[in-house]
Image 1: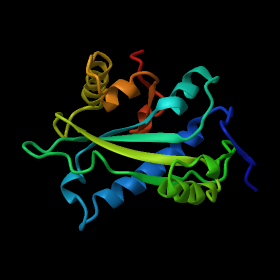
Image 2: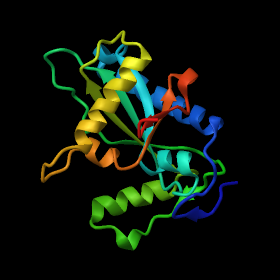
Image 3: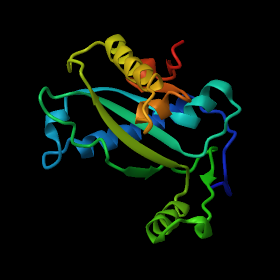
Image 4: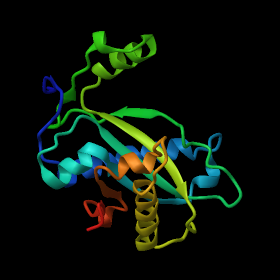
Length: 193
């Protein structure tokens, strides 16, 4: 039985949660790189990280978990723009001690958002959001090089003075935790340890 909806879960994220997130990220990777999708990225996945508030909660155990943001980083294909930097995909974490997120349908800003809230409030667990980015790293890079590339991307974003703040500026305000590869799951990616 699922827990009642709440704004944020205070449950501790553990290795089992990270494994579930890794499994969901694997399904998303398989879908993204399917034969009629983007198969050229099938062997270019560098790492998967949990970001934003849930990652900060993993570190401080105070922030709470509203939703779970997973970032999959790929080695860029030289000379090509990454095709999925604006992609929005979501999944249901499933029943767990993390509970479910509460959605206020009356607070929806438009019909599209209301429709999304209705879909998400039927989830049995927290919402998982999947985001993808590519970085100028060789596809056979060791994990340390992939981590360093993500850290540079975040540091550059954090240092921007641009009026319109880029995604890494927002991500650098919180934290990132490795989810995949499995042997590094739980390692702190950002802020730099």
